[in-house]
Image (cartoon, rainbow, N blue to C red; front, side, top):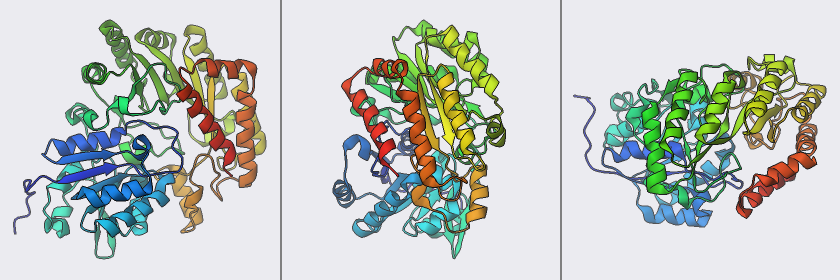
Length: 476
């Protein structure tokens, strides 16, 4: 029998969606789904993107989408805090549209593919890593071929069942990111989203997220990026990125770009070229880096070029005020270097700076957490986030935690405003109290509070910030 990959037999009707969750203050176009949609569209499929956060969709509304949509294939993008919601979604599909092929993907699946398929027997397939090529290949298969191991084994990144075994196909990372094209912006126009971006503050609206690179060569033990995008750093060409920015500005009225890369400033010469060409384009846009950049990649020339190009804010990964903890997490930073670079940003630019801190890393003491709180207050930061450490599937920390816990994983605790049982030596209630104390001590200072409010550009942003604070102090 000839098992060569078949051609497309007929266009599929596909739904790509994010799950309904109780709390989602950051509501922005889902870039991952946009890239998947583009890959499917290029092969002739009819794709819809459903974002409950944008459409204020409740469970009754989603059930109606399932019943009335007549979708051939549905794919959900899932993160670890969304497991319970994904379970409910899959149950709805099996109740109201039992013949739809159900696919799970996203960061959690990449970090724990076997556990995901065991947890969700309703799912037909999963994907690990970058799924554009793999999902398009799966969509080419006719129904009999989707049951044939010879065909399934050829789909990049596919997670599938063969008898009682979960199989995971290799998935080499995409080398030419320009070849992916732009996300399907027509399915998720930025102006249809509320002013609730990842980075909280938006100077102009509408804003749109954008990525210029994938992969991270660093080895921070708490980070799961390697499971999705690998440790191989790859970058779009400057011309390709600028073309997408031009499209967003001209066709969708976007006034602000939020670059969501893990390593935007990794290659200094490329950053300088991008900033100069964007400055010369005179588009009148503002930009932000809400996902964080490494402090050790910044110097005065890069920072000033960024500000000249329109950047108004950036986030930086600090994680801890303890040199011992910084060494444990393999951050390759020290307190002294962190302080030097944060002061450099403020000395050479007017950029707003957000510092990311993490509390409750294994063996971290209460005194070290208090040291982090003091360090945050000593630095000239405008905003901070103090999150409880999570052993995210796919990270080195996850491997250690899973070996310790076995099957007893308290998935309900996997949320940044909760403390994961058995990770920190401190009781969960104490860790949460320290997290809340950190936020109070940082923000309830006249200079910081006035500055934070002064950077808000609308009542919607004030309400969104207030909602995040309420959520922080409400959860136990």
